[in-house]
View 1 (cartoon, rainbow, N blue to C red):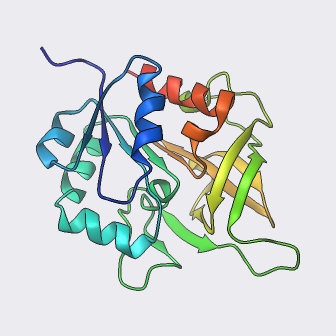
View 2 (view 1 turned 90 degrees about the horizontal axis):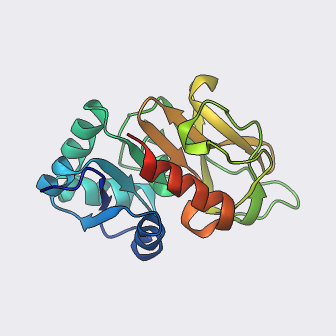
View 3 (view 1 turned 180 degrees about the vertical axis):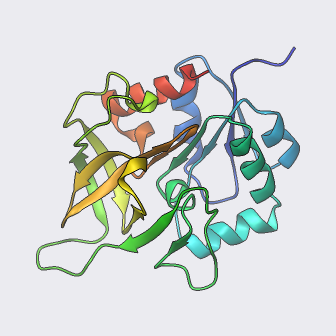
Length: 208
């Protein structure tokens, strides 16, 4: 009998799979690491991690035939979590990309941090989540100003504020958590963010 909380981590060759897998298992989830469309389509929830370049990531997703099953599962209302680059891929386009469009699940563009005196790029290390949306299921019981771990040179700029669930300040204000219906995105690494991050992982595991 299939477990009702099977979470598929989409392995397209560009994700931090091990630590995400381990974090999900801490909260009793059945986890499948896969690049097979059929397994993605049979999962109850999806996680799309990502480290690297936007063009390369979209190229791999396309080459492995994973874009269609991802969009189909999202359309069905299955909970979906994009982490770091996996969050950026949810948007329509990126300043980093020369050849590829994003998945277009969320409206907006991914931008590079500006060149500014004293601003180191990539943004790496611990920073705070501000203006946390109390209604976002991923952020339930995550305190305002919680610290989480970032490592990125690009950030998403949604077309409207209605999809922004938390913000972070680094050379300006940017969306660090996005949320629309069953789709969630974290620009940081929840699996590496200790208490606050693991609370988000737990919340995702418990989503119906």
